[in-house]
Length: 284
Image 1 (cartoon, rainbow, N blue to C red):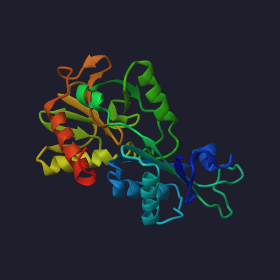
Image 2: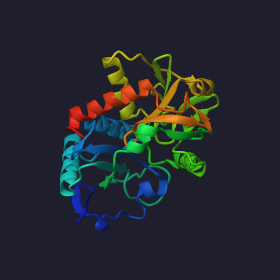
Image 3: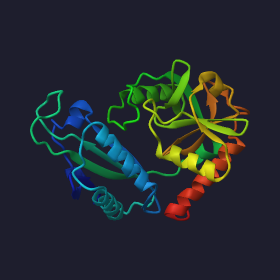
């Protein structure tokens, strides 16, 4: 039996049904998190939970449980589903109410759900790197909120898929923002650069871990905007996310990055990131 969480209850997944007037379904009125699980343990759980609260607060949803209670429920979910290597998907919506754009005026309980999925380490992509394509960033101006409204991201990812690419690198005019489901880094003359964490991008948990390990290991890293030209002229480019970890980008719009192979700085950061995983979750 596979279990899922629905409003604080651990139930059989096929029984986990939400009302057709749930505001997440009708308006995308909610937020979510994806947490990596290695060796049955959540990686960077505290950081993910803090971002979940921040996103919820940003749209005026008050969590119906404490963070400690939610964290304990997720640990129980991992154990019941015997998950060793995979992800937890968790979301909260404003709840169920008659359809109206404005927030419900009566007391409505937010709907919290979570489930697990097996998800392997993407070893081939980590070793060989991936191809990407550039696309205009058409999303709203609060990308720092991990909102359920992902249509812009979906369209960008589909463009990548149709062009036989792993990811779409988004840009607003000449300014590179982030991937459709990842943060983007460039490396030039040994310096690592990624977009500052503001309203135009999601403050990725993996991104923050990378920046921390760079500081701890004397790798010069900067958070600032960079242009499409800087992206194309970079010595190395890589992306990061919960599921993609630290993935080298070797092709952009059909042209090789550097010599078309993962670079030395990217490889070093991959090693440091793997050590961070093992520090928290044990040997892989």
